[in-house]
Length: 431
Image 1 (cartoon, rainbow, N blue to C red):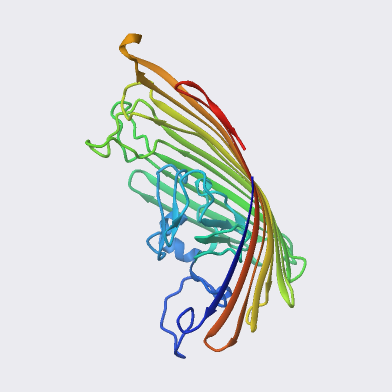
Image 2: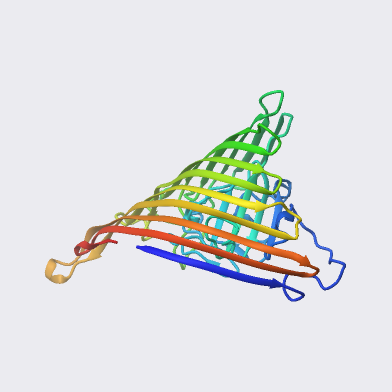
């Protein structure tokens, strides 16, 4: 199934939109640096890595109370089932394309349910509200979360931070970076983050606290700078989340008590690699990013009836494999004309299996009582996309900006689903 789309935007910024009618600007507290976006018609907020550490913010979910018109749900099982919203534009919990696209060092993180990035070794985080279809390779209609890691300098640098809290919560982040030769043309960056917490729920039937969390993330980059304008970097990152049960309990009882016969689990793993080439020229800048990312849910296991009665449970296994390429060109900042253009390619494969076991009542003619049943669903989704995008801004008139943006996309999508229901095999979907 092929889908093509073209987006055209024309914005004239005057005293009503994105402009100042007086020579003196209002005083505003800004964290981080957003200077490269000042010529574009957008609303943005930035936080430096130091700001995030000071505010004890470790992932994008914890920015919800700091960013206007931004929210992210917390299912308690990592990012699986989460919904991100900017200005009311959201994704569906499991299969839709993200309305808010997350980039980590110019690599898109895929669907929201596969987000595992945490803020360790972070230089800054930018939240760009509104559609960014003409600046980034992935078409985002809600906004972009842009996470940039720290770059090594000409000397050895290291840092470590740790915290403890209730429920035996413990976290530690560390980073090490510096040059590998005297000329500082080859350098490296290493980082690691660990977080663990006991559960807050009580399961007296199994005598456990089932909703514990245990997260480990680590990664690194190798940089080659043959001259002042060119940087080539190879990066890799890994995440291993071993969490317990979700925080769902039956209504009409103590909300912190769960008498389930299933321990429950949410185990997520991800790994990504990217090759990034950036050149700052005299007339324009160039960026190339080649990336691959794998994410796995293995499994999400939970009790369907929240009771000590056996036989009611579900297991979900799901994977996402992403491969892509982005090219971006942009003008040198500060001119009368500012422009940006690029091209993108992405190939995303999602596969999964869901198994549900439970009891159903039998009619009297079959002897009454209950009978165990199991239903299964196997599915695969593929999306291959090509995109061209660009925008131009004219800033030659005081207090007025004229902005023109254009984007075109072509999608080739397919789905295959087979299932076994209560009455036997379900007709396959293959299109």
